Length: 372
Picture 1 (tube, rainbow, N blue to C red):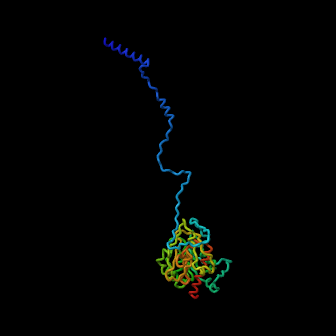
Picture 2: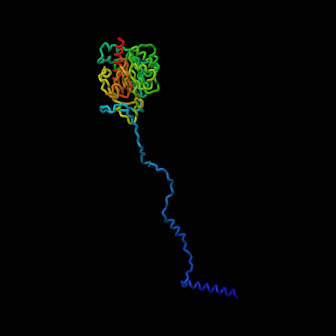
Picture 3: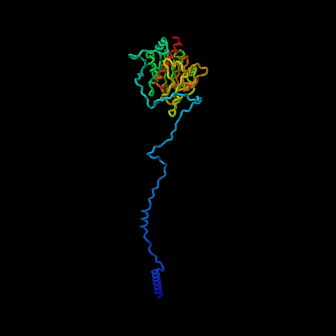
């Protein structure tokens, strides 16, 4: 009986609720909309986000050049140099690149000493301006021993032999061993007598001659001597010291040239005694020497006169400096010349004429000293 009553009450209550909902009195729960399609649509319409990237240092664009900061190295001014730069006529130096190494042509055989001989139909011996006929005859018969390492070089070509040929000194009395240092040394030490000895040691190589004591023996016997070398500063406290002291000069400084930022004007060479025979006899030279560079780095030595010196500084970096900043010196009463610059750093024509003047003037001093 009770079960029936509760069942009836439940049915009545359910009916009442439905009736009230239908009348809008009570809201009936409705099933929610299907939002899966909406979410899918929203996903499709959402803006695409870029994929994450790793942060890396900025790289230059392959289409744009990378601009490097340029730095230049300039040769610092040497302490104690005159503050006023010398005035040099305008000129254009013609550089010789170190990479462009000329190959010597018609090089003589290295197996034997080369004795310059006149070719058929050779021009007669030239008359030397400012030289007496008697003295010229002595010069033409002079016994000359030559070492010139330019022939064995891959950078420079010989000029000393051209100077000799231009003077007509091509006979059997002129013995040129070129770059054969061994044969040159043997001949120098075999007791032979020479009127003039030429040592042209310009090429850059590690060899350093140990012959200065032998050369001094020849100089003490009144032989003439011409030396071109760029490394006296490296050996000035060795065998050559006695000769340098008697000659009357010292090494003031090593002379260097940096390939970046150097000023050619600073390497012009001025006559310090303008009317000296080395600049006028037999050739009148148009000076200063203007740079036509070949060498970089160590390019030579700067000389200065020692105390109470009787030597003459003939050429240097500053025309007002007579006792220092020199690159060319004459001593032993004009019989000996030391050249501290490299011949091939300057123009061929004028340096060949300069070498001819060296040869003529040292030989004249030699013959005067010996009375021959």
